[in-house]
Every structure is written in structure tokens, then in C-alpha cells.
Image (cartoon, rainbow, N blue to C red; front, side, top):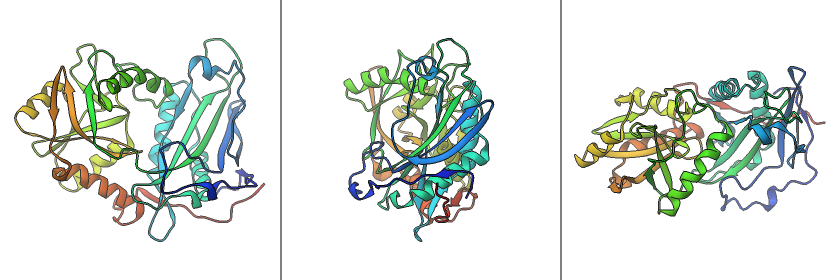
Length: 360
């Protein structure tokens, strides 16, 4: 554990107030947060302090020009009670890829990892133990220059907070294939985890909900033929026994869960294809009775099964959950890796040492 991170503990933990049988996603926050600042070309003053509001000037550039990026990851417990992290190195890679695209400074890998490990160790008692529950970890960075002018900020803040959470989706979702709005285009910011991508998705998602759906299935414009993602997640299809997902061509987020699924299922001998997937192919597979599964994949849900897809007024109903061999296997395997039931053959899991934290 790094000794360069100054730790100031809260004087009164909120932990006794938490109902761990009811953990809505993203609404319950732990006692502490990590903060570091980028000033004069370097990251300075790494610290953990009591969770609370952050000061922000009205002219902070993030509020006007949206230089902001984030990550999403989880900590769980193995059956010995030790906190476990999943693919920490990949999260370092991805946040820095997002930083480069958004013209922001990269976060040194050692700083990112030490911050995550220290935060999780400090908040270990907040990690839920119920099935499909975890400690969700949200690292993010934003511009802090107090200036109204379109240019990259010269100063930034990097923050990590954590949330105990229950299951993200508790039932299969219904998707509406979107044919008016797009998520991302070639040359855009589709590969970056930046706030603007998610802001732009809110209107189409809201319109889909008003029509009785849970989320949209994004199609690439202007033809609206190639499938991209499912809501805020990567998307997978099982067609005639093959696991198929759109290739990462610059418009699609390079999901860490996505990559884990591909490696895991290939190692188990399944055929996995990364390629262009068209909505016409999905419609044809459904009509032929070959569309066996569809699911979204991401950190929060791991696997979110899709029950129905609507495209141009045609509703495609997929087989029931009890027949979903591949999606159910994936969720079981990845959750099993995270809690130590499944042997880690890939070197993805890291145990977090708890104790010996330096206090302010």
C-alpha cells in the first residue's frame, strides 16, 4: 500500500445506517473519497478524506466544455472475506485512452492502482456479501481551470468514490432499435468513457422508455444498419450456437467485461466472432429460429439479458431465460472469478491487503 497517500478518516461512519438488504445502484456512498490534483504538469497531493461535496467555481471549464472522463469497476469479497479487484490493469489502460482522446493528462498507473487499493482497503467493511452485490468503484477526472475559453484545461482533479450496490438489473430488458439518433460515429468519442456520450444518449433512452422499452439498441448512422451497443453496454448475440459481438472499430467502447467474455468463452471452446453485425442479420436469424440469446455486457450488470427487440415496428421475442446457456454461464463464471469460487486461469484477480493504512 502506498505511503504517499495521506488519509484522513471520518469522525463518524455512516455504515451503521445502511440497509444492506436494500442497495439501489449508485445512491449509497461510503465514508471516504480519494482526490489528487494536476497542477503545473504533475499530479500532486494524493489524499483520502471524508466523502462530501467538492468546491467548484462557476467558470470551471468542465461545466462548459465537458472535459471529463470516468471508469467503472467493482470490488467483491472471496470466501475468506478478503476484498478482490478484477482486471485493474485494464482499467488503467482504458482511463488513459479516454484521457488521450479528451486531451487530458494521463494518470500514472502506480497512482491509479495505489488509490484504488487504498480506497478499497479503507472501505472494506462496506463491501456487501449478498449474491450479485459488490462495492462499485467510480474513478473520474475533470477539468478545473476557472476560465471561459475553448481550449484544454491546464489543471484537473482526479477523484475516486465507492458505492455498495445490489443487482443492476433485476429482470430481462426490452430494447428498441434506434433509427433516428446515433450514439457515435467514426472519428468521434465513442471509444472514450466521457460524460458527453452519456448525456447525448438520454433523450433517445427516455423516448424508448415512453414507448414501453427499457433501453435502446444503437445502430450506426447514417444507414442505421450496423449494430453498435445496447444502452450503455456492449452487446452480444448467440446465433446458431455462435457468440457474436460487434467489433471495436472506434465507435464502440472497448469494454473490459466484453474482453473478458471473449477470452473466457474462447478458452472454453466456444466460437466467438468479433465482426460487423447488421440489424438485418438479427431479423433474419430471429425469423429462422436461430437467434437464441441477446445480452448486454458491462461492469455494473456483468450480463443483462434481453427479452425482446423492436425494429421498425416488428417485435422479436427471444427464448426464455431457462434456455440461455451462454449468457447464464458467463455471468456465473465472471461472478465466480470475483468471489474466488472459479479458479483464476487468466491472472485477472487481485487481492487487496487490509490494514496498516497511514493516517493523517
